[in-house]
Picture: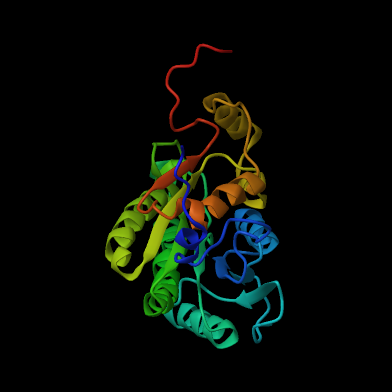
Length: 269
């Protein structure tokens, strides 16, 4: 007979799965970049599972955090340490805890390597790498003091494979992959799990601006499922990684890419 875990086995990790209880009931989640694209989908999915969500975003209006909102926007510049520290402090003042962090703030451009300005490289690294680093430090300290937490960094298949025109973006996402593994190692002693999500091509406002018709055709041909993913599909994977079902998973990079990273030669037209 299958030996199923007892209810308390999940409760000790701060999350619950049985009965009618939602998977993130009473959890407080911070989602950077939480007002658009993948971040907004993650914020909405977490809220639907019972979490209080802080959508920390540069596009959010400045002002105090609404502690009563299911999804509360909070203005933050993830490239600035003072701003990420203030973000964590505001969440702690409002809710007394930070259980979950998703680092979704980021951007990228498709530019051939020899044409990539250093200023573009610096900006992409500042948002994608420095921003992830600073937000994780600020929220990670609160998690350390509580003795538990779950962090998901948004990487990319462009950090796992070489893709044309993605020198700066790919370098930033490759850094996220290694940063995730180091964070997982260093934070495990505090009961904090750290994983990364590596999306493939996803229909977001960013890709609609950046991807040309030719780019879309190339991504679709290279993807086993022959389509772009949706932000909601990324949100479902993020939910799994922060939930009790993933309680023994840390340091992992999960491609959610329609088979792009695993693909070899494809003889289909």
